[in-house]
Length: 186
Image (cartoon, rainbow, N blue to C red):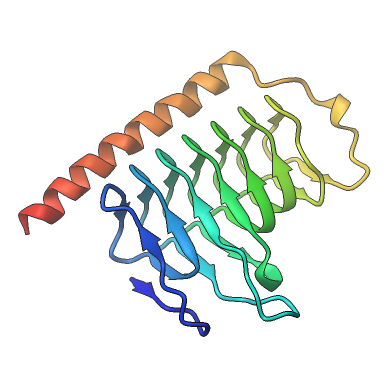
């Protein structure tokens, strides 16, 4: 469902994207080409800062936002999700936040007030709160990263995780095409 926020901002969704009918996209949200938004995802750009303004939530091309993902932002801060990025089931991305290109965020993970560098892999049940991750960084399952965490204690992304991330993007790209074809047939 696409709906306006209290400021009257309506989502802008590419004709080449697929948004599941059970998903809620509210307000100043921009969804680019070949994006897949799965069932029960919620993407809300509806809070303003002290000046009454807000930045958009931007989902760049070829990205997939899977079932039950929540993307929101505090006080009108920007959220950007990069190209070819996968955000898995029931994750929460809360702005201010930037997730760069070619990132994989595993199910049930939370990212808040952070920049996640290109080619990062955040595995399942992780929290990244208030600390930026450098390019090609790997966060093992069930890791909590916050201010003061020693990033040097974790190795770079193993090649098999990068390959897995690429396969998820490819599978969801196929889903966009398939679901759009079915919708056009109805």
